[in-house]
Image (cartoon, rainbow, N blue to C red; front, side):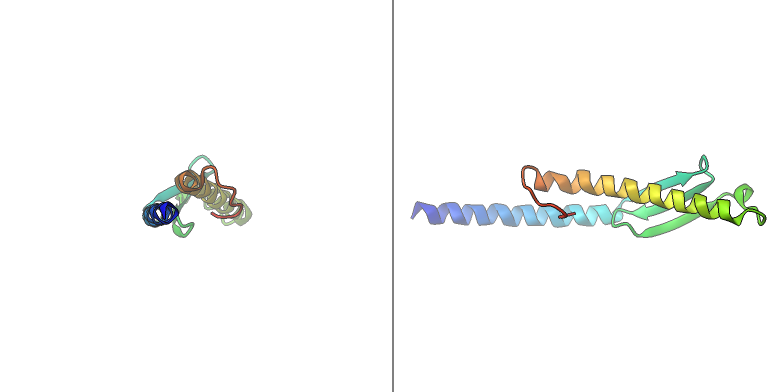
Length: 106
């Protein structure tokens, strides 16, 4: 019957881990990550869940003659913010998957 005790203990540990993972996911959603481009001319803010929260464009970068440059800066700032959000997610959630081979989990 010792095997059953180990199984129950393992299930309790899994439940604790699931709760901690859910809390970590919730905290990630509250994080605000900034991505910038053009030396801070364009800033994009995303949540840890990769939702765009804000786009800030400095007035001096707005040139009606060069809309393409502004589009490129917004795109670059967005990609920067999303990359940082991915890194935060991987470092936060990676603690739960250390030693496990779970490709594509997060």
